[in-house]
Picture 1 (spheres, rainbow, N blue to C red):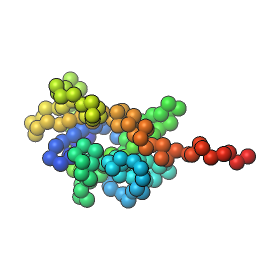
Picture 2 (cartoon, rainbow, N blue to C red; picture 1 turned 180 degrees about the vertical axis):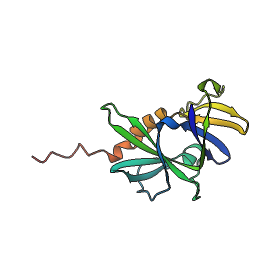
Picture 3 (spheres, rainbow, N blue to C red; picture 1 turned 180 degrees about the horizontal axis):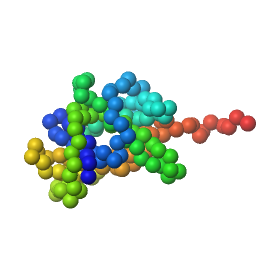
Length: 159
């Protein structure tokens, strides 16, 4: 399994590279009101409105730093009607990939009820790398704020 590695503080994390559409530099974002603080904002991604989650803020409670290595990892997921939904994940030091078999993932005994998007660990010569479950992030995102880019169905139709 090929994974994209990045850092949150001093800790390393990984996501499946098969879900990564592209990695882009940090771009200006439109702030959204009435959403959790870890939602960095929205931006126009190839003609679609895409929300961005600041993974540093989500996991460690402080926003990503303004560094040259801070990137937005664009990932995709199919919706029920088979259209692609995009989500940006902002992280620091998005620097390399790692190829490890899925059998090397080790589940910790710690329960992640509060953060179900945090998965198993990969033991590497440089330390532990924690996997991020993208499906769980997309599920949470749809419930909380992906509707911000959806059309308002409360308005009467103009016929």
